[in-house]
Image 1: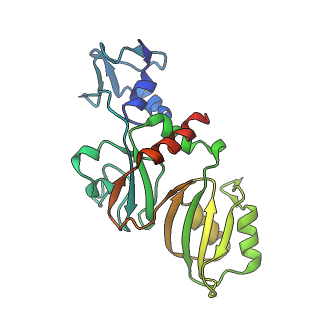
Image 2: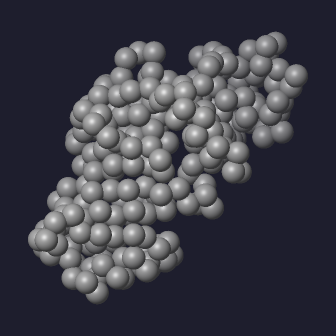
Length: 238
């Protein structure tokens, strides 16, 4: 049975479906020796030979993994500056997984990695509003009025952020718990900077029902069958 090339690439974990479309348009994919740069191309996964960067792409079983990202690692496969990447923390059999969203170099905590491109697209799509919870340490006590502004949403890069939930983790006003429903680039750091605060430490502790828990820094674990079942319900929400 033939399927669209971008779906095949997503199913194989090459990238999300949207990113796979970009790879196709950029001429990075070959089908049976010919560059396929048309989004309408269909392939037979069992008969056609598909190459990405001149390497064969093959159907694989779906994998889902949680990683506790340490500071100073970037969420990328390679880096022109030769900085450490999260893939330096993984064994070879998991190096083909892609991260669902990113954490900047100085942010620690929970990352979900998978080769399920459709799931990645579902989680990252803004309409699904999957909650992501962070522990935040700022440089001075948060004023109540600023907490209210963050909770209600701020104009950030010309667009208002979605409502969020913010609370205090101690009585100093420095350690906070923030839950957001988006994943814009450096969103939390920018929100606090707009109000005159510097984020000294940022750690993601959950993505939806997925919890960092007692997973040690720099360590990873595979999701349990029960967790995978719940995770795939996000995929159905498309």
